Image 1: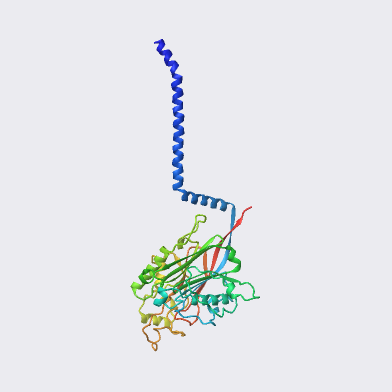
Image 2: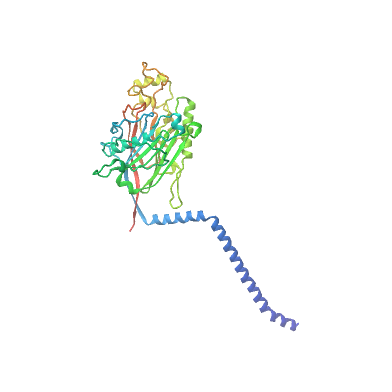
Amino acid sequence: MPLLHCKENHWRPRVQEIMQSFKLNESKILRKMLSIGNFKEGNQNSSDAKQETSSMNQAYANARRCFYHQTKRIFVGSWNIGGIEPPNNLDMEDWLDAGNNCADIYVLGFQEIVPLNAANILCPRNRRNSRKWNSLIGAALNNRRPIKGVEEDKIAEPHKIYPLQKQICAEGEHEQDFQCIRSKQMVGVFITIWVQSYLLQSIRHLSVSSVGCGIMGCLGNKGSISIRFCLHETSFCFICSHLASGGKEEDRRQRNVNATDILSRTRFSTDTLHDMPRKIIDHDRVVWLGDLNYRIYMPDSETQSLIKRREWETLLKQDQLKKELTEGHVFRGWHEGAIEFPPTYKYHPNSKDYIGCDQQHMSKKRRAPAWCDRIIWFGKGMKQTQYCRSESKLSDHRPVRAMFKADIKVAANCR
């Protein structure tokens, strides 16, 4: 027994040394395996890691900045011009009112800027009218004469920026007060945005998204063009649209389908370095303008009688869009200013008489008058100060306009 005990004492240190060595090697192997696992997981989630890092960097940068607020005036106008080319001497002041009520930003939307025939719908390359409208707008805002000749685009350009100062300014003329930052046409829908020159350095992340929802649910005879940008730290989105026409109940439902498609299918480009919204309603300030085509729930004869008596309040109680704004599902939560002007549709050409209210002018194109042309907005930070129509007789629609005061968040470095 003593001998065995002696041998046990002799081998015990050796056994402990071997066990410690084994545990050390096992620990190294385990750490290596964990390291490999982390490396693989890092590769799989590299994009998530980049986004998280970007968000952390953005949060750190924001923590070092102070913010204050400004108010900017935004003019929004919409006009269905029935495919009519504007004359060179067209007076834009009645609509833009720039001489009396100048804004910082002008957002102008058109519908049927070209005739909605098969050639223009299937081969949408006619840019002559959109260029002419931009020339007239630039001249009106900058108090100049429009360009004498307008060259037609030979090739359709999907996202055209118009540096109009190079086209309008002649030698010796001063720099423009207003410049076009983005214009886009889709068949008959056209939107153009003009800003005062001092704002150019503060506008970022311009992006355009078009949605066709006309023939076969995809062609551009009906649909929308949306333009978004950031002014300082505030994101804006403007939607110009032309929705399904018609006075029947199934036509109203189709308009709702069009609006739903526009909200769901509109997507803006983004990148991992900037956390910009991709959907319409995720922007800070959203305005929807256009020929929304909603009609009045009332027999034509009763509608015409109320229009002759100028009983707008009674008519508006049966307006389809007003009901959608308060009771519907598509535009619930959107806002519209008080309508105190006559219906904008449908007039005889070059006349102040509605088609359908004048028994001397009966035609197959007879339509009950309605407020088809509208401007609505979504979210906070916008206050509408004007909502009215203009009296140009160029088309069977009257143009509408609205003025907004928008709250803008501005960043400044903290000391």
